Length: 277
Image (cartoon, rainbow, N blue to C red; front, side, top):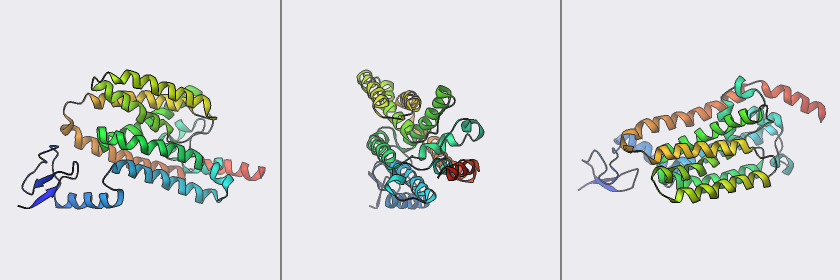
């Protein structure tokens, strides 16, 4: 008898089955199945959403390299402020004037060290979190907590200096692990919460120029989202709406970077940089 593989749990099913007998999700039709196969070839089977978001982070960093017009070690360690603004970083009052920067800034990093540290944690945490809650929920956690972290930063520092990076979303991943355990009534959430909170505070003290407000805002909102996903009772009913919302979030991230590239804000900063060179 002919069989096909469920793209979600990789279990074999009969071609006549509308749903996977193991995970219960609706099996895709011929067109959707082709899209899944293409996605697996490009992103791999394990943690595809983590890999997709990683590719977006690296793509924006590559754009920073091109715009910065400097491939020296100094340029890699810290881009010009005009370069960061051009790709979507945040500065005082820009959160109100150009609110899409709350999302674009999640994909901008000030230099190679900043990128490596954030992406190392992002991938390490993301693979486990994506397995625990699913790709759509993971994307919503990372993007949502990244934005909320910068919103807290805006309220906390008001005004704050130029800021960017995925660390708010990374701390959102950390908080989501705590929230999921809490929602599932696992008593280990208390010890995990204490450990991660201490870790966040120590990291904020040890590392210079750290946006502590974004870290704590991402961590707190990650706990909230993780708790909600941990308390879900009808995952299958919400699966498709959450996928649509997650896809819209990823698309919005790409659009936000494009809007930042179209903004003239960076030009005045670049003019001042040229005067000082």
